[in-house]
Image (tube, helix red, strand yellow):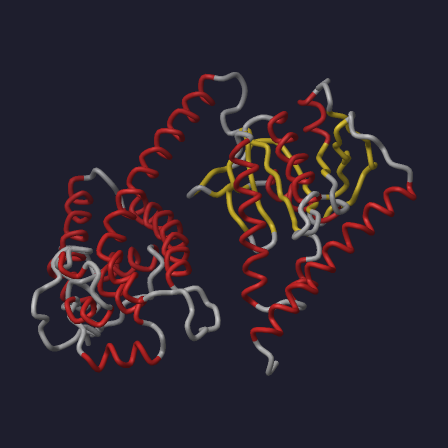
Length: 406
């Protein structure tokens, strides 16, 4: 059954974000009434402090859910199996017979896809592949948006969040975000096309990549000392530094895996600069611990914006044996790098890596860096540990202040 209200609103909301202009400056109750909510729904949402989420729910999909799987298969000329597979690939729960999940907008979208399939312009596999990429990417965008609107924080009476202020900007929020996503998507398509043309015109293997993993040291221990909100702040900072550093130096963040970032870049010199910069940036950050970085190079398979193959596996194994704050790479990196001013490497011998075997490995470092004696290194490390411990103590103090009963 539809989860939309049975009573008709005084004025239908129409397109997403197309609510009456008179709502500017009105309170949240009037805003939700105009969106079609009844007073019982509004009161229940206010009791659970979900008014903003209720508003977003009906702003992003204002159309009534009218059709189940059988209905939309008949209207779109796609089979129920095709629709189910596509829906699942987009990241949504699999529709069950009888569940009225689909709107008129869904009918038009699926009908268009069906026409393209019939004309042979696309096939089922391409459709599913694109659905997976779009679904995965936009799921992260949606999560970030909802987090910004409804952060998972304890409610504080008299806090600064304003329901009425949200009501004033909500009708503008969705159209603005759609414009931004369209613009950013176009720019990314242009950048990917230009990068691929450059690779195919360059000498060598166009599938050649340097793959790197940077792993945040001590994350598991930290996760047991702080609450979920403070841990989220640590992860956010870790991700922010990773994206800023990798993108600034010409690489691409492939994905974040909890306390680990995977990145890639076409050439070895850029990869080494990214790896060393990551190690240095995290080392100098008082709020985060060191990272260890592993690098490997060679041909990779790219599917749905992810990378696969032996090179990826090798880089992942290498990072697991690197010391905190160090950058370790396979021999191919050093061979391709050649003589580079300011960069040096030192062999650490052959290491037996799981499922790979013995591999000759090297530690990369900047040659201009002053090598401290052992005692000085110990002092420096102790000071970093003290700063991190002070940070944990500060986090614990704030948590105790917010939750004195715990």
